[in-house]
Image: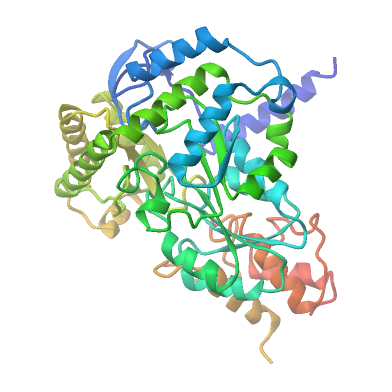
Length: 415
Length: 83
């Protein structure tokens, strides 16, 4: 074998560099269904600890909902476990078409195509739709999967400063000679929890003859009055040309994603998108659960309303406790600590207090903007949030960061 | 005529420094390793240089290291006889 000691050494050194750079990622083992109360084994082999989960994308609390689990179970019985085929050979069941139709109705678009994940949807859509005569103009904080998808596409790339509409307009003017212009944005940005100015983006798209691409993974199901996402929140339902979203977060949390939008674009994906053509699609069990999720959230807005109340309580509570948070209205609430080590220390202490939240720092977020990202869920009850708030207050007091300005925190701990 | 390095510095400030950023970008400020320009956004800087000076910078030369400061960009441009 060619995997000799010298080859092993190359990888070992690279891994050591990741460790010494402080960005080595370790998995925490969850020994329970996903939910607000979970049991965690961390580090591996340590005693299991009961904690409140404040870092899942389980926004609507549907990951372990009994109706969804039951629907998935029935799907398993009725349509089996796997497809053993890509979609266009013999990997499409009636329930795949049903889910695509339900997503189209929910998102208010013309058509939808499923992908194994939203990562795959983003990896496949640009290359399938655009050519080297076109240009993609992306917000600089779009998700990594979009960046990867853009890199696979031959169209010219450009970027604009995060949510800076003046800069976007300049870029649209610059690229008026391209055959097609595609503005690319997330709906809710996953690290800061802010929302795209989608109404302004659509206005600029109309003025400069551009299409709009929206990744609404952190918004579908709960942003907007009926949970249709950022496009509903910003009053531009039906005006977005390409929407990608995931079934791996609010919409049941299992896996899978889609491209939804203009009929011809979806058809181009069916003909040309490589993750669709060369990979099995979502398994029947997940499709069945996702169909039930869409039925549940189309019947009532109860869960997204509760999430909205939880979010308001949490944002107000943290602010009154004296912590610095990123302002906004989404259930992604970053607690700003600025210093990377401080973010790790606070997360560790919170874990000791029974609160599971994760610290993020450069290169995941810009230098000097380390934070703990908290995420709310409709599965959180008031007692969860009160306990979490008490823990944040206790740990914040220990580190002397309550009721301090950003500059005071930085003066004490550095950037 | 402003010097090339001033033209590039002005572009970098306008293109990459966000409103409210407390950053003073100079000729030596690390742009990529300093987190001001990420590799995703670097593409507009490359295109600016190519259009402005009518050159083609091959991807192999458009490295994060070569683009890491205004001074290192000047060194790169010298390879294309832009002085």
